[in-house]
Length: 176
Length: 353
Image (cartoon, rainbow over all chains, first blue to last red):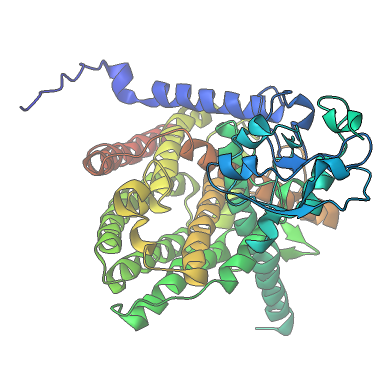
């Protein structure tokens, strides 16, 4: 159905357009002036300014492995996180801890622990499922690389991001 | 013709083109991006160098190293000719514009010819060929429409452009641009006659039609340089870039720079005709010392820069005209107003002389 758009009848001042144009110019120059005198809030200038300090406690950044206070890698290679991981980003190859080791009760440790950060969706399910509290989502968010291979975080890298976690579950200490 | 004249002319050409116009063109692009950003509450390019000041260099490097792609269906000769035709008229117009008084006794105008303004109109109307040829030679629909729009728009507005300046030459009685500036030094700027015999009522009576002339001329310059609100030949939303859709690399850059060069020459002519050229009240001309000669040149280009800012300011304020509105405005309003304006000025002149 054709609709006739009612056009308002303009008076001579409106038809001259110059007052309207001047008003428009005044609005834009006001914006320019406020920008020049830095009265307008602008976006964060990312690489120079970062919001790292304001990140909330529950922020979900890159997953990482942690060591406990004794320096032991907390992960016992149970592979629950590998199971739960929705995009299947985690790959674990378990190894056996030798009998003469201080922590031989633990039985297994991850020989290899890879997280493919191209696949990772930062869901935090690995952290949730981990019975040993060995994997945590840290606050690193700028994860970059030139190749796909570079984007796979190996065990060393994960431990480096994770650092040392004190407290929480320490059940293996009592069974030394 | 003596050697001194030739050497100074060559020096002036090289200095004006390579030290003033081309840097000004590239920094006009930077300024455009910065001004548009600030108006829209953004920051604009601020990564390359301090405050992004090396952005034009980065842009140029990018344009040079991009693939220069020629589509298979184009008319190659005209396809290559069009970018040159877009750039050249814009630059050679500056030859007759007096951009300073004198420096070491040398007049600061490349060619002080006695048909100054006619030369300007003759050359600027060549600018339409660049766009029309680009549109036609691309052998593609969007550029073709852009070229057609551009040709009719430029031809329409050239009428009001020409008619709007006739009153000035009625007053000055001379087509030479240096004598227009000289007149404005003695009798005050065309639109603001505060200096010289400013108590003369006739001067103020003339300032009213001069203001009308100024408005029409500036708006026609907007249309001639395809700037918003009249950028229909390259309307991005409708024509996907218009006449330069099929161009890439440095050929595209030439269109882009040609538009800005045309803006600069347009502003230079507006400054010469209406804002007293290189004259600023209280500053003597170059015969009082070379420092004043340099200040005169600086004043001229400062005025041009202020006008360029106005161009950008308007561009980021007003929306684009519809095509029929554009034609209506050009033919039914500006043409008539400019024509009547000539008679008004002639009447006032007959009255006061």
